[in-house]
Image 1 (tube, rainbow, N blue to C red):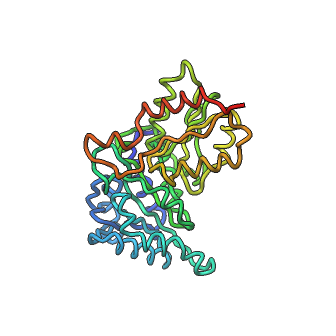
Image 2: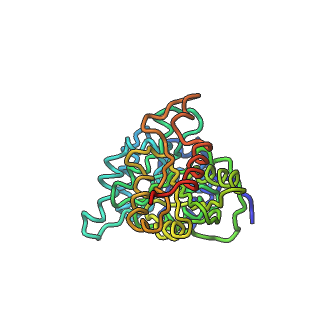
Image 3: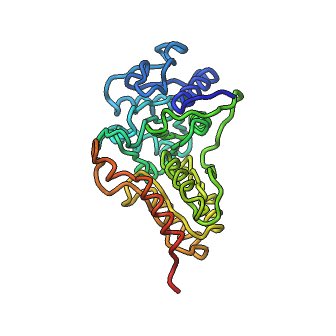
Length: 325
């Protein structure tokens, strides 16, 4: 075992896959310097032909990524901020996501769109989003959002080896987190959720950094409420079976997600729970999400993104409420 930080776990996964498979390469803005560290040191190991700095054009970088993937490579496209997927939307949503279907299953697009996501540092509306719902709404893309270093490494290796385009959003607030990582290779399959805490009264389904808020809330309430925390790890594929199994046990559920509330990830998950486990619910499905507004910068940010107190209040309300007879 060795202790790795969140960012270092991602970097190590990329390095291991580049050593294993010569078709894997990295392309993006400043990937040789790596402002968010996940490609740090790779150019020294693999050279500039496989760690390629690109001009400041997310659309062009994504386009080169799609073309290379269709030609038999496994590129990793570093968009820097996940928010910049909007700049590259035509290539990611219209090209990468649809080529397999458009070419009658004869063309794969094995690539990873990598970006740092989330709020917490007052970076303002263009550098603080988690565009998860947009990705989920576009068939053909997979979506990974790890919350721990262990998960980040195992999921990154799975994403690189997948024959489909995968969006891999890693959260800014998880970056300094450290965890013991096995020396031997491991891969975490996409679409398999993880029960981070076992409980019996309320199920909390969470994504990315929100998993840590959920765990903290569960610990604060452990003397009065037994909370089960499910870390989805990937949203596409979605492990709805793990969610339903937990909801059947607890009868109450809170979905915590940092994307916006309207038409968001939590809305989709909540609806699927209602469709598949309505008869097991003892209270309405509750959501804790970002407000339906741009993410403010600096001191105002906390009024937009979910806070610990909101998660705790939602759990307490779910535990104390029920459907009318």
